[in-house]
Length: 324
Image (cartoon, rainbow, N blue to C red; front, side, top):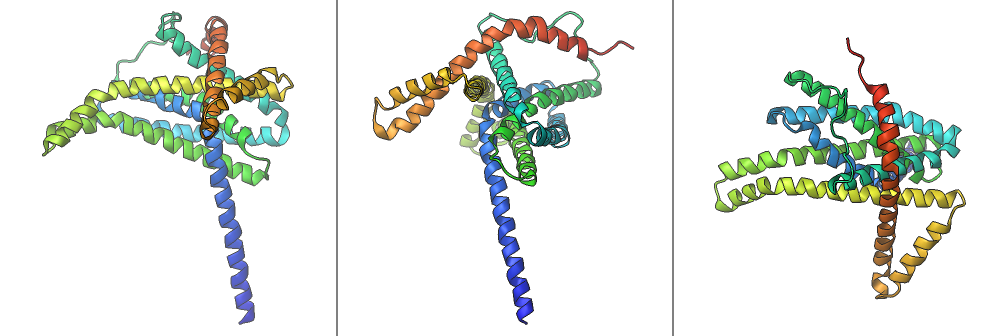
């Protein structure tokens, strides 16, 4: 009997350790995911365009296909690559992180420049692959394009998350990265599905609602979705510039070029403590984020000529399909 009780105690102890480990993984995954906010919001803002123009009944199947492709990108390709970097070449993580930050700054600044007419953005170009008219082929083309775009954004997310994970064992890192991959994918594409179908929900409420109030809400949803999508794009762009600028500033500080980081901290501290003490923390964070975002915008604008005139043509030459 005493042996059985001892076994029960051992099982209970193991269960407590396992539960604590799960809590640690979830906690670290949540913190790491928060660090990747810019890329996550951008992912959610970008994806709805890939289902634009399709029949309503095809929207969710397309999103589901992109979701599976996103999980494959993160779990089969990026997670092993991240673990290999962390364990065999950790010195590569900061430069790669800064490269991802520069990409976020470039993407955000390009959107700003395009909005004010200073850049053509991703408009048509010579030899661009022609849009296929057949719905099945078009769906295939759009899904592939979304999964390719997701790979770039997922690489940023996983690199940022990897850098945010505290030093721990191989299996803890693997479990945390896997949790980040699943959590972010569910949040992003669950949100995309809601956004894409919200106008359909609003239309159904407007046409079939039994109460005037319900019909009014439905009409409000239908009218409000275009504006909401624009707002989401603006928020995503701002988040990209903020996160990208923050990554670069922090990366420079890690590499010994800490003048900019010290200046940002000094300005944020001066502004924060000039006002009410109870608001100091929030004001300091806001000022720091604003300065990081402005720095990200300036850096991104400087990178636009490099991206559009050098990197993009090279990338297109490698990814362009050979005619059959």
